[in-house]
Image 1 (cartoon, rainbow, N blue to C red):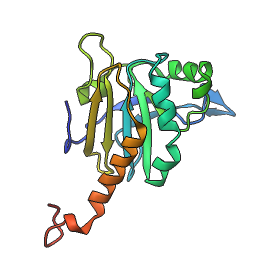
Image 2 (cartoon, helix red, strand yellow; image 1 turned 180 degrees about the vertical axis):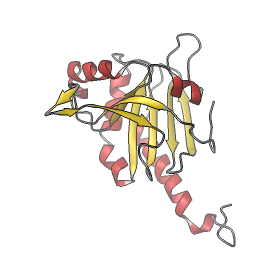
Image 3 (cartoon, rainbow, N blue to C red; image 1 turned 135 degrees about the vertical axis):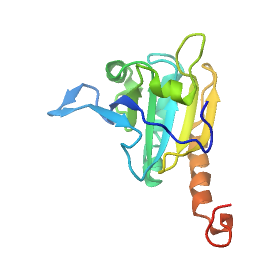
Length: 182
């Protein structure tokens, strides 16, 4: 499993843009390819959940969604995904009233390439564990947490961790003489 200090390797997943419930709306596609270089200069919170249309996942997605503006204020792109495809995510948004207006990216990693790169695939059922990665603007992983399928996350805790990590990078008390980071 990738851990703190590891760099994200190249990846490509099918992204669903914030706010869309149909594959095309007002002449604009809801779909966007997301890669490791899609959001230059931004922090990223990448969270995985096992499957769409499950009972715990909507609670977490709504929890993250409620904090989208807070992540935006911290120059951070929020992305949640699973191995289900982008069309399933759009259908789930249409089907579940709480997901009708997701204001952050969702993605489908149907090949499992990102899931496998990060080492978070459950060997029993093949889907992703509930994993969260905070990645800095240089694509270096700064935080990893992984839960089993039936244990949810607290999105507010992820925001707190992001605040700490962003402070850590900026705080002069963490720098040695000559500007080198300790």
